[in-house]
Length: 156
Image (cartoon, rainbow, N blue to C red; front, side, top):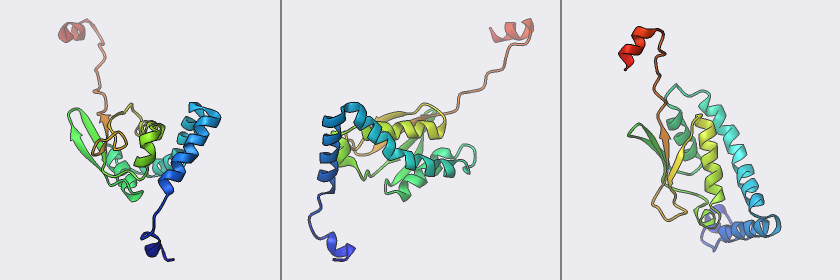
């Protein structure tokens, strides 16, 4: 069959992946599942890091969203308060991640490393939300150091 014809037939990829992860969990415990999830996103992290290193300052989240979109996540960014939200409108592994949230957690860890700051996952498709949403806080405001007593009096 061609790829187009193959899509007309039943696919069991999600079932196969979930069965494999259950086996990993039963054989090696939760730590083995976490290690698998981290290994799965390691290659993605390497590819995305190369792209983010070329990103204009302040545009890293947008470049990350573009890379995720190329990989099938239909991602976008939007301003949200004192930061941004990265929204993934599709998740190719949502069915499996429902049973194994370690996949989402490993992805969130990668986002944090790539963007160089703590990020917070607010919602996931795997948890039943309509979109995976990650909050990316803005860069911390710079604080002028107090140089002398005059500056200290002004600061109070």
